[in-house]
Amino acid sequence: MHRALPLLACLVATPVAADDFVALHKMTRQLSKPAGAEAQSGAWAACLLGGGDEDGTKALFEVAGWNVFSDPEIGMAEISHPKSNIYVSLYMDGAICSVAHTAQSSGDAAVLLEDFLQAAGLYPMEAEVEGCAGWKIGRFRSVGLTSGGQDPVCVGTGSNDVRFYFPEGS
Image (cartoon, rainbow, N blue to C red; front, top):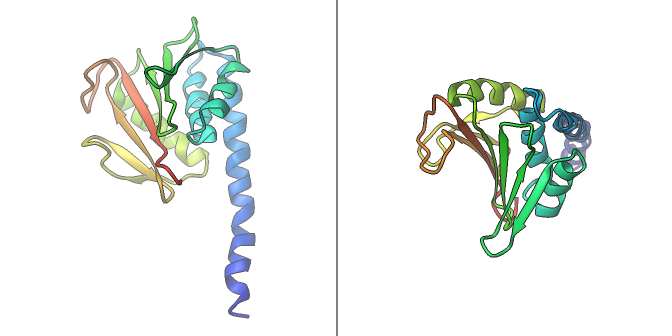
């Protein structure tokens, strides 16, 4: 019986993980409304579903009509939509998926991000990420929040940048 407990725990946990995947996949549909407030949640969901995989992440945006420009020389892909205030930077090594919003404070983003993570079934734990606000999600992944722009600070009044970190092996 004791040997069966770990297997039983895995079987019980599987539907939760599947539900999280389904919830995130549904959220990516919001990318089809790039001018709406929901597009930000859709971009966050696409980053999480991509899990650091460049091609998989780009495909989630492309199918919704977003523009993708990849530059292998600098090791990044830039993703945008002409009707959106959201810009995504995807590091081609898969380590970071960054979702910047040019018309929203980092404080507002923090509230929305916590709600988003819980709705996705990820139950974040507050943690400092690169000296600023952040959350751990699972064993290996984390999310950081700063202002947007070239020289970000921890708190931005007019913009924000949410970065999903996917360390190698996660």
